[in-house]
Image 1: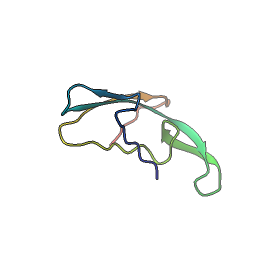
Image 2: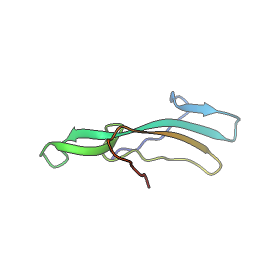
Image 3: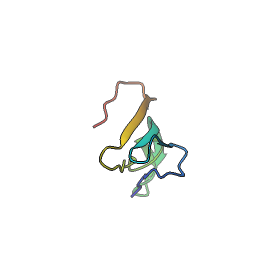
Image 4: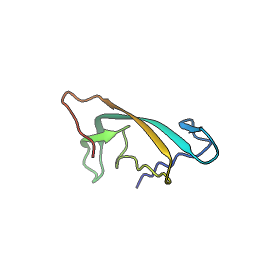
Length: 78
């Protein structure tokens, strides 16, 4: 399992004041060749990671995520 937890030393972290953290990230949606069950095939991914990143925040944190759809069709994230 992949867990992305942005910390103060992360290049995507910006501290706007001592109580509120602002998280900035880009999610690239694209096909990625992977073999989660030993059979390699194209898998839909975010930033070439399987499973997709988990966002861990605290109450009152601000989240800025830029979604870059690199697919040939419209995409929804939920």
